[in-house]
Image (tube, rainbow, N blue to C red):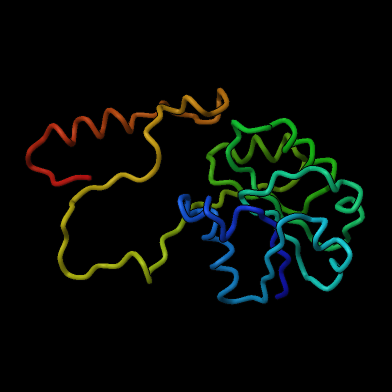
Length: 180
């Protein structure tokens, strides 16, 4: 499959710090002809050469609406970081009749109703080339992600209270676990 992948953050200094921006692109690249573009403007004149356009996690440039509106191939978008310009993202996906939306957030059905576009849960995965058992372990428990108590997220982004900080404090207070 030939994929136009639009994301200005993939393979940049930002994605060197926040590796999840590169993950999907790199995985698609392993099994597809996947070409990276910074914006839709860069691909709009040759979009018919592709089977699908994927707007990656770091994409948020809403400038090329007319060109995107004319795009006749399937468009896949991500609802990522809902605390950032959420209403603009929802309107954009709805107005431009995306074929599919993906999100790692549990309220994907709500997004589906708001956008009037099919939205599926797209959980993060682990690459077995990176995460594997080597027969020994240094740590028994580990945390990933920011422990910011959801202060940076739009109200209602999560159905549950963020209890990671309390779990971390509990585990670190126990001398029976080796944690990081």
